[in-house]
Length: 112
Image (cartoon, rainbow, N blue to C red; front, side, top):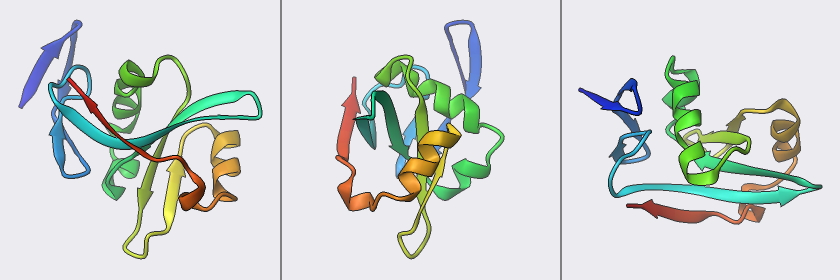
């Protein structure tokens, strides 16, 4: 299925257990975190593991800017053992690799 919005046609994407429309879905829900560390503000968004290898990965990342603004968006997926994999700006990914996920201020976001 497709949706036309802001002159961009995109596929519907499944993230977490929700079907969302990246650029303007109604009742979109996702888990993420807004972090300011060492003068850098960025967001982390939890996605399913297949998103990190998807050809739609960058479109998905850009879609979350609607909710966090023009800041770096880091995508995070966990494997079956709960080990996170981060994807995004390399310096932020290196920083997050040394942080236990329980130290991240996760929040459940719902956007109307």
